[in-house]
Image 1 (tube, rainbow over the protein chains, first blue to last red):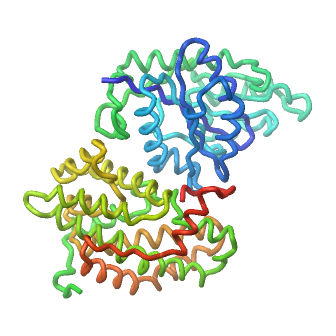
Image 2 (image 1 turned 180 degrees about the vertical axis):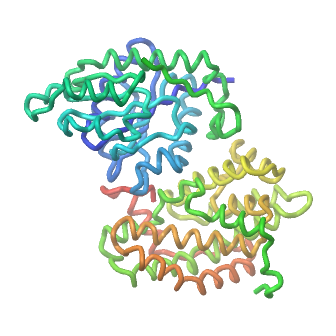
Image 3 (image 1 turned 90 degrees about the vertical axis):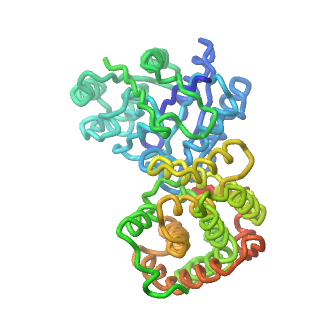
Length: 235
Length: 239
């Protein structure tokens, strides 16, 4: 049996830095010997897919980056009916056996976005300080339920009047024991901590038996009715 | 046409029909526009009348003599005891061969795979299991319509109702694309769906009388639009 990859969903509003974070995370994962595929869910075009391909040109095989159209329903494509993402994941996992990570970028959406536990094993939710420092207080399910909350573009805080201390305190309040962190993904600041989180989450997923199921088909482990090895690392 | 007595569904069959044909059933079909995104983008379809024309082309031009005829054939083969898996595969391959646009073939395959996978989680069925194995083994494409027929048989949905439900779902899906792209509103969507009911019945009649060995779907306007969609800049939909 081939181990299937650890699937990580990355959600967040349009322009919060999901794509940039992926472009920074992938080289670091490759550096520590992990193999990666990327699935983007663009809302309107193939812009993200092409952007990631350009940014990772020479770093990651372009065949390992695939865009999925969501029929104008980005949340449905990762939550209510992730069929097309599951289909593409199955195709990719069959085509690139031995892959360690799937990074699945959701189309930009609102703060209620959560991922189906039948689609991903871990999820990141990316917001940015320029979207307003009151965002954490809005307590969207996306922010509260994700495995890791990433507050990006800290470099912009002085220009948009965002109070990082307030965002920190509010995030601590809504997240409880669950982790969050600050990044400036464009400059690569804080991305190491994201990698560390992913590695921890993947390790506990593996030790929970998550990877030990074959993926010879597009039918995922959970769909076959096995127990779901969902594993979050908190704190 | 079936007489009234034949049309009485058991509670189980009615509820299974509603479940399988529901837009909430996770088939992924909502990501497909069947060429409509291009027709709207290019201004060819821009109002309710244009949407009605698309529904007509879909139901009577394409589905009745293609997808639905294959669905009925697959349902019959799956309902034999034991199920006729070889015929299901033959119908499946023939239906895919009738699909001209690459995006239609790919979309149909993906939705088909999802339908059989999700249905297999609901009910054990040797016919369904054999069809899934054939798809995974690469010996058959697993088109959406054939998958629907096999799934409906597994769920004990009669042939006629399966064809009606699939046609309803296709029409509703296409109208949903028009709503999401802003061409029609929610009220028009329901009115056009209601207007399509006679066509849905007619499509089921034609499908029931069509030999799956002679599939003759014909909707060139939609086929060309789907082919053009492959290189379109705006792509909310996968076809």
